[in-house]
Length: 400
Image (cartoon, rainbow, N blue to C red; front, side, top):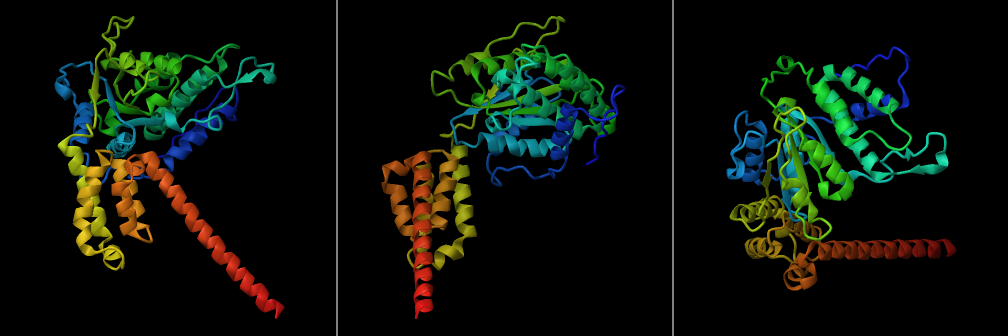
């Protein structure tokens, strides 16, 4: 991948702190090779992957989920936790990146106080430093997308760098630029200068962005981001895949209203993306159950020799085990993956299998994770005991 040139500044020949941070982000993205993201298991998730890709690459009216609208520029993938939404997003990101369509991917769940930059409420008073999550989340999202956009389309880097410098110079004492300001300056305006022919992109092809784990973003900031994203229109040349957990609590119930509420026309008179295409994995569907069966069957085939040579696990148990685990997973792909890892790493897989079937506490992921932790602790204790015993024998021999 071609390294993007550093933008020149008339006032200063050396990069500012913010430019250096941007260059570091861009360099990090450039070092990630293609096909490096986590992928869905081969042969699984075909319907939902095809559906989202059809929405993303359609140049005409969208008919995804029986919604016919040319303004559906946002796809909302939502479902229960641990159903594989983020894996689907990463899979698509890799495919879109390889095809030259990916603008950027951002995961709100990756944000911590260590990764967010502090924001000073008063430039002359560092004691009043605050995190002000709304502004810093907005900064992180827009600058991450901008860094990736510049990495993929190097001719945009000087424009993005100039916009970034102007945004940082325009910061007031009380607040950072809004999401709308940063999104427009760092993403939408530079994209107007994209040399589409250079990248074999038609004028109608949309550059694709992914926002993962939206539910991890605080409500106030989430509302601001969604207002900005839902203001995009066909002339901006982008589409956005938004991923979030299915609202299962009162604290997240507002996501539905925020995502599905119609948005008024933009100030320029161009209709905004008022319709959001909503999709889900549907854990109880035949397709999802078939995916879990395929995953377990393939995994057991790959490790058949391990189970065949295990004195406490008979070969005749494999097929019934696959069916039992698939049913026990209740549509949660991650449960099946963790359960299999427990079996393949167990000293006594038969005992683990019986526990997985009979123990109610192992019917959910929290129970599985706790069991994994307890098993790891038991193994560590045994290793420590063996080490202590060996050390004791050594000391006895030295004494004699």
